[in-house]
Length: 56
Image 1 (cartoon, rainbow, N blue to C red):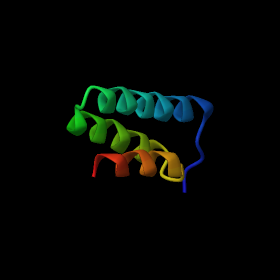
Image 2: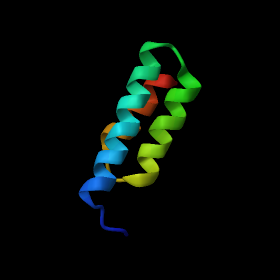
Image 3: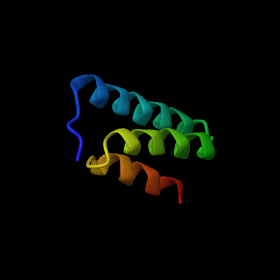
């Protein structure tokens, strides 16, 4: 289990925000990839998983 730095959390949040923007543009594959990137950085953040569920 890896400790997250503030930079890592911020990067994960940027991916989440990117995913949110893609959802608004109906670019679901791109949104999924952005959310997956966020999950890879911070697998313990439930928001990233919930956002991914919107796609399906």
